[in-house]
Image (tube, rainbow, N blue to C red; front, side, top):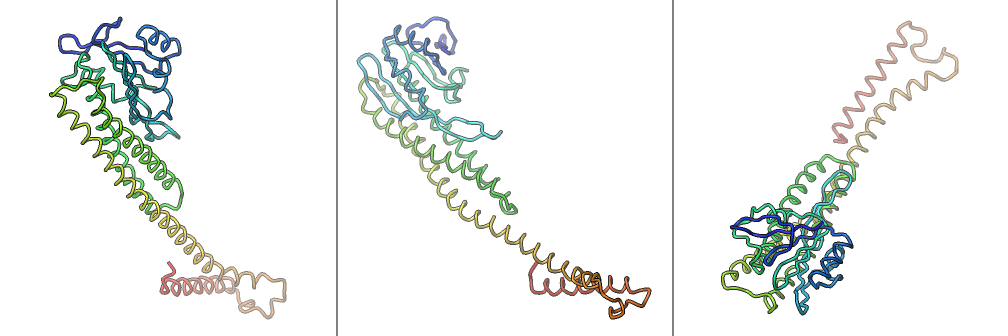
Length: 313
């Protein structure tokens, strides 16, 4: 899908035809759309396809008539009816007259720009637009990192009484997300450092503060991802031991119940043998059955009290 936006009278509008100073957003474009854009604006097909490869690394490439910036952005992936966090490439192509973005899916990094919810956003101010996208990207990482931290706390509460591996697998998925985030943020950091040196992208004095904010925000996201990853790694080892301990407690309780219940079973088995009743205690009294039942219950209670004092349960 190809959409064209332009700032008109201070607000963003979607237009039908490309104009100077516009923003062309390509979301999971078809092969036909890619070839049309390539021929119309002189952009290499490979550069337009690069952001559509989930394994593509973050980088900056300077060509004769345009500059390609590839950065990883956070995204939500639904698996087993639950939301997990991954990263996908976002391509920003800057030409002399307009700017292009290419992504596999609609990302929240760009949605706010399309809806006109970003202050001081003008499609014709390409350098500021790039920095605003990168700043918004770093902010999204921070937001998702906080969500991951809250999710890990919720799973931790469930694990205290759990004997299953489901919660542990959820923590593993969160840890994988943190690994993706850390790797992508470090790659983005290299892009930001190289962005400072790229001469094809003009940097105005008023954008210097914004660029510093982008770098600070990205470093903060890296630090937060590293902290959460370390906490989650140590937590997984501890909680695996908790699950094992919970299982041991359950098995111990079941073993105690089995011991207590085996006492009446032994007594009833003895009386159930096919031998002469003359030698069996209480066989001649009409209350024999009731007496045996009561003795079995009393013996079980004594065994339960004894095991309780020994702190078996």
